[in-house]
Length: 485
Ligand code: ADP
Image 1: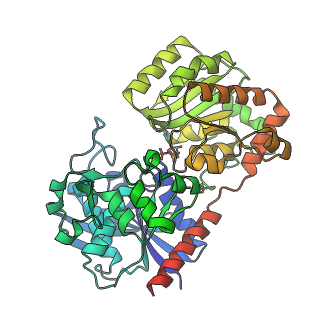
Image 2: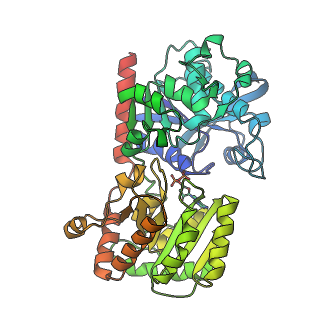
Image 3: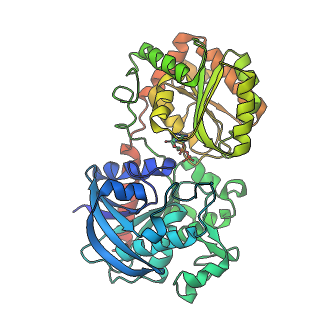
């Protein structure tokens, strides 16, 4: 009998994506199917999700889900089972799942995602007829209140359900003022240090961290880092008390969607044995970004433009990058100050720096397929996906030594170069000097084509499929269901 797992997430490709969470939640069902796990994904009914599933099959109705009517729709998307929480008052809004068109968080995010958690807990605990799950797996703060309802106010009769919570980024915690507690429809006992109370308010992520049977995060190094104040963001003490109930499982990538041999977004498909074909992609990128044609190294970045991602250091390091014969193509959106600094830097270097502000999935594929080096100078990085896409596409990653970046990239030090294990460059500390030195190292290696191509090929041939990580999640599911039996 397969294990039936309910995955609760506010994003999943191909339906809705603002970041890496969507890639992971979208890839998990197929990865786990190979492990004898049947995964159903519950998503909020954002407009794009509703449009993709059409009418769906109505499975349940709530007259009041924290004050608003809602229904549950079932559908198949790309062969996967999907449940959609159709609650127009909460989710039928244009734009980003979390922000209005001006970039401001929706004022009622706490109610929207508490309602999402309430619904998930009902489904997981057997309160929705015909749906039955062995285990619930929630992702990030948006789904974390599932645990609070499941442990403190279960409506179903399905017995206690084992629960896993995955933290994709400790920096986003969903913390709200204590005044919301009375509207959460939780019993008074939930207002405690063992429940939802967090630094005098209500902490969504903290509730999950406290109440899940197993907490995973998306790389072993990040799992070790978050017991320290600089990475734990206030929750490091709780992480430490959870001990070996906090594990790190590195993300895989969807190798069907990210395969340079078949990727329809690329002008020229290629494999590790036909790297020369990347040139046509480089030419196409130069054209798109208005860059001078050159065979010198083309650096790329695909990122949220934030402090976490070290994007603020890029304007500082531009002169060095260009001075070393490099050019930069950047795709991203985020902080206005970083955008302004990048624009000023680009103005100093016409034809050498190309900026594309916004979100463009196809272009992100084209950049990995045509760029030579991807810069990922994150100050912290739970796992990171763009460096993995870089590996798969022969776009050599230059990364800071933190979190998943340090777990997934093998630095081209002399020993790694000699043994043929190197896949990229790592540097310590996110500041001008460290990044500039790393860029110099990349340029030096790029100028030795044989060495460079070996690094590209080693990265392309590395295994970043979901098979291994899927097996690790399945082992955790089995452990918890056995403990619960
Ligand atoms: P995070 O989730 O913290 O933003 P990750 O590296 O884990 O960082 O995942 C980011 C994902 O979002 C990757 O799939 C990346 O390609 C994609 N991405 C980020 N910014 C953009 C953008 N401006 N346009 C297209 N894709 C983007």
